[in-house]
Structure formats: structure tokens, C-alpha cells
Image (cartoon, rainbow, N blue to C red; front, side):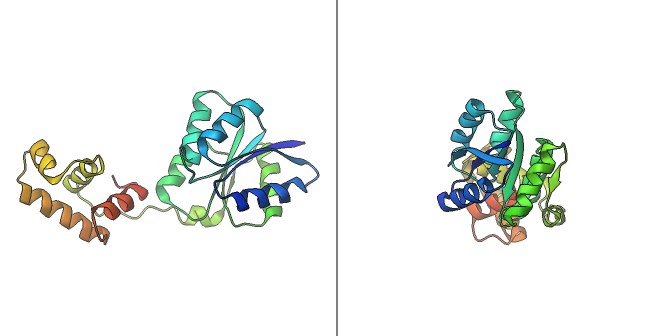
Length: 200
């Protein structure tokens, strides 16, 4: 039997996935977690063969958990489940040596087959996710990236101007230009978009 742990913060989806996978003759769901911290704890305790990790969970993301599993030398194989392609996430997942990177809304039979292939040493990646990972060229210049990064750390425009020895107006202009390039409505949205695309 292939022992599976499912980590997914949406309870209905987690329950449905567990129910369907349990119907497979050679798969047994041994645990379920609602956030990344619980997943890490259960993986350490139960030592499942494969863990299905939602990429975005409270407390710790699926990628945070994967990276920590490497640090503690866990032999549990990891399959990341996601709803759509994100360049920064894909690269981080591959760097963390995940065994699977799959679309969450794929058929259960396909997921079960991917689990079996992962157990045989294969790496399973949804073609749609590969296609969606080609990086867009970063439109931000070095100074804009630097200022947005400081802003992401919670620094005000006044603090940034002091740190970088620029006038307040110059900092505001850089931020404004960066937000225009990102087509963002405000600084928070701009930072989030740039971080997701791996541009900061």
C-alpha cells in the first residue's frame, strides 16, 4: 500500500480527495492536515510515502514545508498541488526537488497514477504548469526593485529616501513609475505582483 498524507486548507476539497484516493486498491490516506505546520508535524510522525501539499496554505505554504522536509532529511516524496501556474513558485518547487507539481483540478484517476509513478522514481509535472512558467521579462530597473523591496519590508517613502540618500520626491517618482510598469493600483498590489513573478 502507498501511504498518503493530504495537506489542504479547504476542508471539503481535502475530504473529497481523501475519499476518492482511498477508493484506490493500492493507496491509503493515513493523515490529513489543514495547514503547513500541521502537515510538517504529521509527516514527521506518520512518515507517509507521499505527501500531497497544497501550494498555498496558512501558517506555512506547501513550498515552506517541502524545504523544511529537505532540511530534516525526510524521505517522504512530495507532490505539490496548485490551481494555476506561477513562475516563481515553479522554480522554487523544482529547486526543492519536489517529485510532482500538478494541477489541483485534474481527474483523481490521473492523480492516483501520478502517485504510483512518483513511487517508482518518476517526476510528474502537469504540462500546463510547465507552459505557464516561462518568465516574463522583469520591467523594473535595479533602483525600482531596490525601492519596492524596501517598501515590502515596511519602510515608508521617507525612510527609503534616508536609506538610499535620495530625495522624498525621487523615491515617490520611482515607486509611481514601478507601479505603472506593473499596472498595479497601489503599492501593496505592486509588491505582491512583483514578488509573485519573482521580480524583487
